[in-house]
Image (cartoon, rainbow, N blue to C red; front, side, top):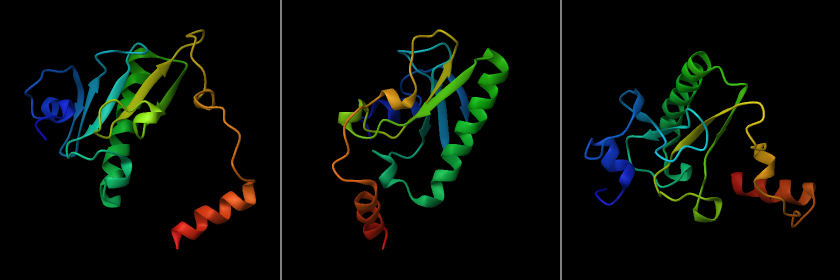
Length: 138
């Protein structure tokens, strides 16, 4: 996709600070980091969200997330990590190309847990919600 900035980075049209690459992914440092070592793992094939990725390709993406996280643990020695995916514009996904953020976390960094991202009352109780989800898995 020529209009996708991540596809252009993957094809080397746009330079980036790569930290890992294999046949399936490219991991780069975020150009607008939220933390020291903020990286993103990008699948080389263009998938707007996780729902478009064939299940057989997810393992390679998350294996790369694990490798980059392990390397950052050794190199930067953070106190923890927040790892996540913004899925869809409402969640903050500004580039419609799946990417997994790896954010090293340091004591006193001012960030919160993933639970601090949203705080909205459920529309149904747990049992009703479970049934709705299970019905879609059939």
